[in-house]
Length: 496
Image 1 (cartoon, rainbow, N blue to C red):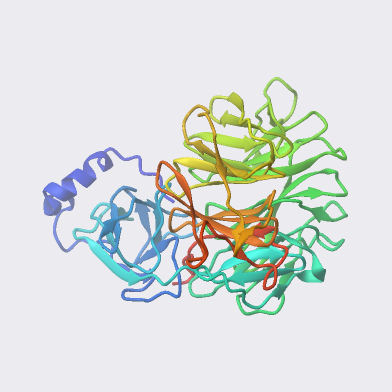
Image 2 (tube, rainbow, N blue to C red):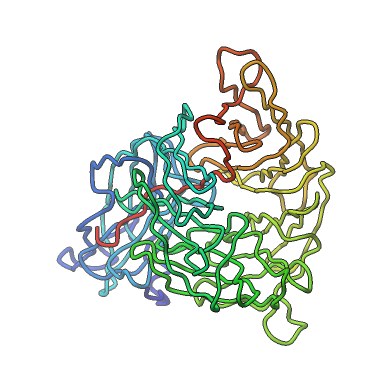
């Protein structure tokens, strides 16, 4: 990607709007022309989309990342432009933080003049417009002992199981399609002794294909969801305990070839207690945050994804070090310049202002240990699910502020049919990226749904016949749920 540092660029976009012909000279000059897009004009996709790719007739450089507009069924969508170094003729249109391209909607994208310029420093004079249709939301994937199972997003009817390699349990599931190629990735509890602790499958497959990963000679282990899509929208990043090294290992895997491209051991020293328990990306998707336990206590390690190196967050100690945490390492999220690390072993949480080293800690006052933590679509609140909770208060809501707000405990009605199931633990928690809804699994067999209106989290009744707030009993069709998969919309193929 070219760095735009010339003086004339400062006024280029304004000149394009006021007097386009005068800004670059005659109309015979070569200007950027769009030759292809993904999705294509008028294309109907099978489900959602998370990125739009625009290809030009010659190399271009990004001139104004804000020279873009988009809407879904006529409602504006905050978007931004991005260019990758390995794609000189293309740009990507991405939803802004807290935004998504909606499903089941007509999407319109407008690239404004001044968005890009070519090697002759000329820009387009007219808007480029693209319209396409997204499809319905995909199935929800859940992890169960030895298999992954699709659930219909509306009825929760279970589809055909997909077997994991060698029967390992999936601790995380991430659906990220490439073009119209549908694919789900599974992080496994172990690599069957070989380190192959990541696998993928296409919906409809009977089994998964394992991915070989680098180890220190032994296996890779994971006890909780530690997998994200990295910022180039092409690679999966996952964290494991490297059993042989006794340390935390980060791996990066190319989704097109299903091969590892990077690996890194983090700074926490080797120990029987050293392991990762939380993983998140910062808002700019450039820094990976890893909540770890180690012999010196809980820490928050940070990895620069551009260089794939750990950032020194403990300058008082010789060598690279992670940032000490006042609470135990656990499920981690990031929003508005702050990482939130929940204590998986207690009722506390730490809020870390990543750029200033400032740390706050808070006790939410509700008995239970953190199983999972998610951020809502509009990035206004965090939702945590608790294991071994008492009474009915199995969820914790925190407003997304620069300081910890007083948390709110939210009750879960575990009624199915005529009465309560006696649930006492959240086993799976997931946010729908396309709307403000959340799925919560309690005691492995009951699925419940909640909505967020910006002020309150409200449980949705899933049984119109029975009185009260009802969940769905999956003990027959899909028993033993321990993780609910996350998802992103389809990504642009490499060669649109």
